[in-house]
Length: 364
Ligand SMILES: NC(=O)c1ccc[n+]([C@@H]2O[C@H](COP(=O)([O-])OP(=O)(O)OC[C@H]3O[C@@H](n4cnc5c(N)ncnc54)[C@H](O)[C@@H]3O)[C@@H](O)[C@H]2O)c1
Ligand SMILES: [Zn+2]
Image (tube, rainbow, N blue to C red):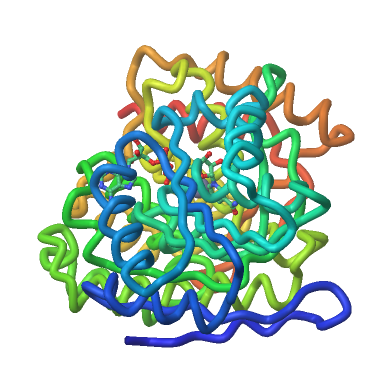
């Protein structure tokens, strides 16, 4: 089992460890008991993950003599809202949870974001541990302490910065993960390779077939590299005031695409299209090397993440969504662009004509 320490500024948050391994459910109980001793634990999960992994986790923890309950809610982003939050909190109260309780978030990013949010506010905060079960949450959302729920007006509008006491990653959870969800995670991993770690990018190029075949040895390595990159960025900029912005690479256009397709395009596909667009803009405006653009687009193609925007998602629609973002953000859109691989920077505005030409170019 690998162990990675997240070192945070003591005045703001406590440091914690990320554990990564394959088939480590038996050891997770010991790690929880050691890192986060509590009178009472509540596993928070969703309706898909609870029967798959919640019950086995519960019986192991109970077998160790720990007092544990479980609360679950209907799976999916649509549950990441205030009414589900209140329903979970009410269940916690019914179960007798108090300040001596601890929460265990078992699931994808939805479970992690919402459980973290509840942990940061329930009885003025209780500790929690993240046990991410999707590829996306194992490489991205479980690390960094951003918690949130969605409001009708938009995603992640109510949230806190609140670090977990530990992150426990069992790669075996990925055995049951549907294909689309797997690709959502893969897009974020490719993002790390492009913005921060050319070595990781090379590793992805070399091992693409084993990754697609979910070879667990290779996945452990990919997840470990990804966690190291994300934690390195979070250590420098825990509160998202600067460097952490580079993690938005591919996400500005990606979010506009997701919304304009009425969320029929998945996050992973939208981000990979957003990354391709950002790379092409970088080539036009900042001489990003054409051969590196080719490498990126080839890798996306081989893994099966498309580089082409579907016809029905209109360029004008995408551009007007970007303009709406611009109004919200004080009249500039912060695009993350690249001088070359591993050298991202935040640009304060791309001319509309360049964006239009780039988006149209992604249809051919
Ligand atoms: N906090 C952050 O820094 C951060 C970063 C990125 C994304 N996010 C948030 O993460 C959320 C997306 O997370 P996600 O992609 O993990 O989605 P998700 O939590 O909705 O999980 C996707 C689906 O996979 C199912 N699932 C989970 N684990 C499974 C497993 N092992 N086997 C079979 N099915 C499984 C879930 O039940 C769900 O239906 C979004 O709300 C996004 O805003 C947060
Ligand atoms: Zn993302």
